[in-house]
Length: 438
Image 1 (cartoon, rainbow, N blue to C red):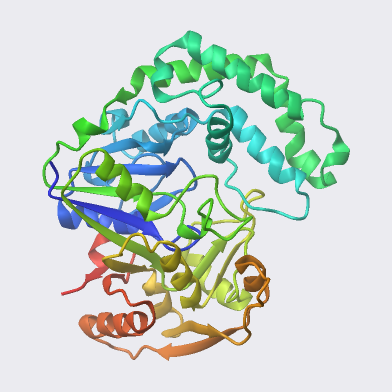
Image 2: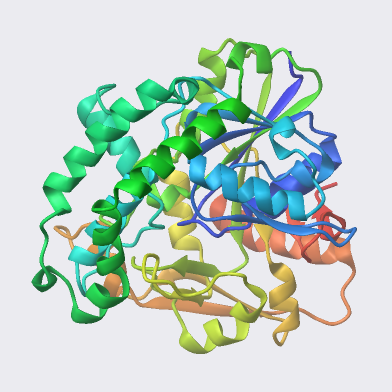
């Protein structure tokens, strides 16, 4: 059984830099496996010191180091995404990516019809976006919660073409009833022409339905099913790589701008304990050195000028589903909220990422400790954050500054407010640029 398992959790709405931290921990601890939970959404970016880079979705962020990935029972998988990511990894020089991947047989499978429904729902909100990655992960999770196994395809079903066809047909019938006769008036005119027309076309395309069956059948032949019990028999160190962030947790996140899944670290910890793991669990919280949010949702410290300075170093672009990406000074109030709603788990430390961008932009680190105005008694936290007025302190970072002095300074600023120690400071994109606590 593993001696240690690290659980890496994003304290924000996502985009916190989990990929870089998981990759660095994979190298530092000589990890034997990455355990994925959450959903096949977005991407976790990795830049390796040897020059390789990749944005991972379902393969873990230790893949460039040859570390295998296990898709846990708490992972919603996408066969379409697996095929696309596999082909991209082959171009990077990984000859057979599926040799580095195994999957729990009970994983929920997201289909293209979940994706179509997710995108329809966002378009129907018109100019009042909720925000979604648009891959259908949330739709797949909700369908399972609402209907059980009747329409849900699970990983073990991918080995039976008849089951794939039967359950996919039920999904198609369900969504066609909702969206198959939808009219142009239901959408913004631009959205109708740019997006809805194609979604409607897919709903009426029998060839597309058959293509999905063929693809799922092929992925079923490639995907190796493994039990969690077998995975936990490994030696050394493992890392649980979680998707999303605490602020998008289905119950405790900033509603309505949340995911369908639970993102709090307690769920990863319970999964390990329930499977019989009795070794050491080390919980790390991850956050950027500044605020970032891709799409709709409250962000008190948002600053357009700050965004323009910071985001040239980011791979995140605007899209219709997530919306525009925004940045602003680090908001310790939001981090404190994320820690409070995660209180069932005591974090062992914090990993702060992208500090190199602070050093590259006037060496000034803006941090919000408090808001000028208070929350009204009857306000939801989301409503309050929409008009909260941040008080920002600007910390100058002298140049030059010894690495250990920089680490200790950042640790002092954060721990005074958050009460958890800094364990990793990322001062650059690769594993070589990480500064660790002594």
